[in-house]
Length: 252
Length: 131
Image (cartoon, rainbow over all chains, first blue to last red; front, side, top):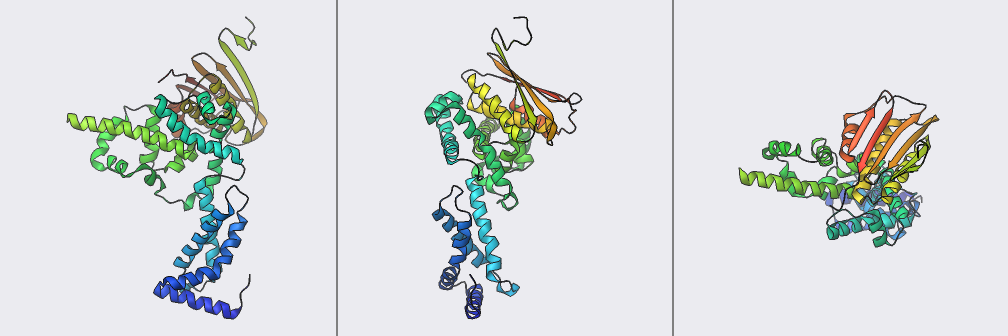
């Protein structure tokens, strides 16, 4: 993978030009010149349940990021700078996909299927479905459903490594902007009073989310459940809380 | 019926598990208990609650691996509830318990009693009908 001095000088020149001009054609040339590095790194992450195509795309995205962020005045070799950026992007992809290496594909698929089935059946039945009902809907055995639920734990081990790099607003994005409004200063007193009237589980979730300011992913990791489950529970208790806030405001 | 070792009397089944106090068995404990709950028709949400609860109990009783100890779980399956008592053998006091752990347990089960000196935790999850 070594490149000759002439090639290296040419690349340095391109990097400097791009740093100054942000010319997209120059960027394309840089991408082409370094694609091999990105593909090489992508292959290191293959056979982990994500297709090589996807990995190559993610690695290419990492390469683009590295090109954008590279500052030639720091005197680093581009490959030295780009490698951790691309690897970081690949790891983040695994984290967002959420799977550690050990979960069999069948269980992963069932885990993902359950997330949508739970939402559908809860809506249909007007209550949380039983495990037997979920198993029937998923055409799986009850044991398989329980094992797939347990796969949230694998989520946890997969995500710990990249936690510090996690985007701090990941939770907010899931929650929607309305919820921030709910917790604005003018509502805080009212919310605190209403919080006391909620069931303990809802109090816990809201406390972790808004007072401890944990992201949904961090709550999921602490409790050992999937982020999807946390998201669903939070959405439900925020709905409940919003209704109470509104009715309290209407009375005032 | 008077034999206390009867696994079944009337409408209660008693299940006892004795697991090595090692981290990988946390998963076994969770799967076993949720398997019992599922057998009794608990809902997805309640099974998730139980998974959280057993994970918390395991974390409190086995904060570090203890090759010399076993985690004893006694589960009593009643028509309306699942009653679980957990402790280490040999018995070991619970050294560190945070407010958050207490709050988590209070949030996910109907009843939680923690005896720190004896190192014993009892939780009860009731079966909710239809709603």
